[in-house]
Image 1: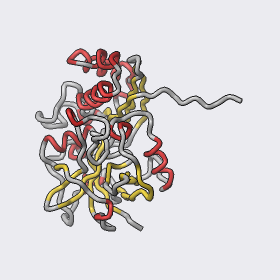
Image 2: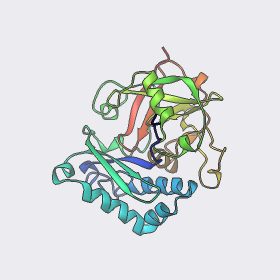
Image 3: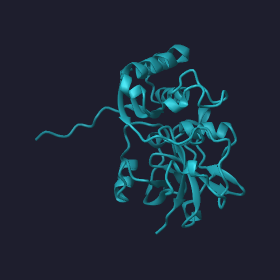
Length: 276
């Protein structure tokens, strides 16, 4: 009887292609030579860190330095048709241990403002949230808390195709990719790790905080901070003081609590915790 073989592990990142990111639409501070690819250098860096951890020298060689960034950029741009270049798209890039790149491109809704990509700050809870912050709708994302606990590991810290924890959490709560819902992944010791597809931000002690993640010298087996992924928009928010790191325990969350979410496909968007 044939046994089911496990698919080879791949590293991946998901980012947004959006004409709204072209020079003239964003400030000179946020403009990028790789526009309209949202935070492309950060996406390249996250793949490199994962490749270094998993000891994939072919990937490190492929994507290191300025030439590696140009390789990734050229691969994405050459994969886009003229029609796709005229509209926003979700781009998922995978890379194998041998350094083979692959791409999936799918259309996504328009975002009403570049605020959702590069906010100077996030509005405090209880303030009048501008319509633009709602991703073009008056309904915030519903943020649920997973009912099961998950183990911290290299596969929650780095973005790989080994995503059973995330897929099963979304399945438990009946969340489809297009739903305006997110589920928070919670570690075995009760800390919020991250969302299933986004970085969460919570208001604590008069500031926005996000669960801590070990990077650089701390990226060693068994030392993962709260256990979540070192996301691209998360990195951007921390570098600019939009948020700081702080442990967030799942039992500290309050029903109806305002929060923010971010990822490389949507930018920053508003949500509310739902406990029941």
